[in-house]
Image (cartoon, rainbow, N blue to C red; front, side, top):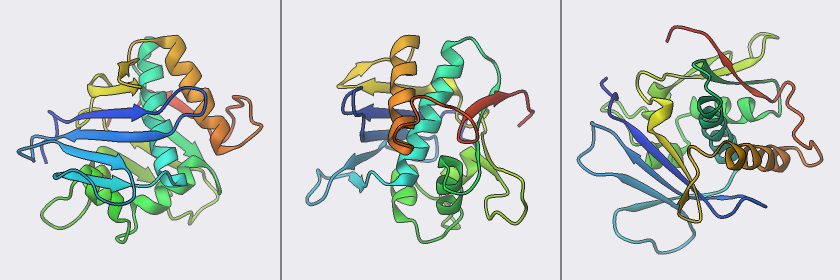
Length: 195
């Protein structure tokens, strides 16, 4: 599948207590953008909805941290890694279930009905069959980190190292209140891997 021309925008409400409020996903597989909006009720035509769940929080954290790695000058492949009750566990479990509709809605599906997000991320041990950590890697040849844009209140912060670090810290604190930026088993790191 050719997703080389994929682009993703994530729009957050603010930086103090950030919540993902809008997504825009483009792929060469679709003739138009897929716009996702965090909402309940009636949406504009052509817009899909999603909720601010642990899974969507984990995904938002992952993409923000990917941009942070790039802004720091790293050429490593972004990875989300953790154990039970980590962002990696939440996202990994949902990504490989067939009944998680918002992932299909926000990222689209292929002809077989699999969400395109599964083709953008590689999951290792997502079903937790071993004692090894769950690992999710971004396939940067399908969705380059440069093609991800991060906005806060319609201001593009994609190249702002300080704003990305603050947003990343606040998202991590929401995941584990009181963590204060501690990045151990729930961290997102860069690794040199060929994907």
